[in-house]
Amino acid sequence: MFRVLVPCSFFALLFLMFCSTSLNAQDARHQQQNAVRFMPPLPMVFMDGRLAEPGSPGATFWAGSDDSNGLVPSGTNSNRTVSVADLQMPAAARKEILTSQKKFAAGDLQASADHLVKALKIYPRYPEGHHALGVCYVRLKQFDQALAEFQSARTMDPTLVESFNNEAAMLFTLHRFSESETAARHALELDPVHKPSRYLLGLSLAAQNQNTAEAMELLRDSRSNYLPARVALADVLLKRGRTEEAITELQNYVNTPGAPDKEKIECNLANLTHAPEAATCRAK
Image (cartoon, rainbow, N blue to C red; front, side, top):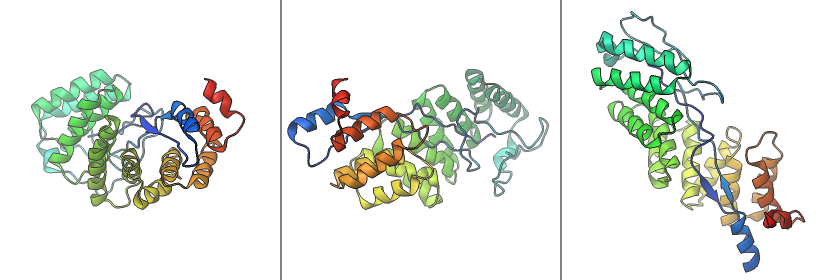
């Protein structure tokens, strides 16, 4: 089955309040009015561990043919073997899954989901099928349904680090931050160096105002792979009273070509540094 998830830059809101301890009450009110309603892109991964590329349909393809005995996903995961579930899959379920994959690759997400639902009615205990259905629901922005499918997948196969990761992403999307933290930690128990899950754990801790050394380490380590980690790290640093370091993170963020929500971050940076353009930000 195509074990995938897609990049989702439209995902959950992480409200980062840039409040310096040196601000007076009036400045603090202005700062709150201009707080960044920031949307960090969450790391949604292929089941073989590769990150989906922005703008791609997010699907891998079958290594087997339509009449193969067991369907093995292509990709870089050489440790993936044919499971009992693969071998026991009825032909009718396999046909629905293959049709779903073709629809997904063509961009017809609802049809892809519909065929997966049919497949899972025939053969419900297939974790890759539930994971793939979660993918479709993510793309359709049906996040509660996506969460349920990822939870089903990792319940059936507790070794699926990607399903735990994607569960954490959905819980974050739904502002269930403590649960997102738990799911990310489960993923890291399976793979301690899993970069997407380390980033999600850092975001979840920051969203809960757990401005700990662990949160800082996770977000620092994530900066090279996830640019918005700089914004979350700046928030943590500010709350720890380390304003200059936070300013440096934000400056590096806005100086990066293509940084999302750049104008909003520039406005918060201007407020932090008391730059002249801060008055324009406050007037908006």
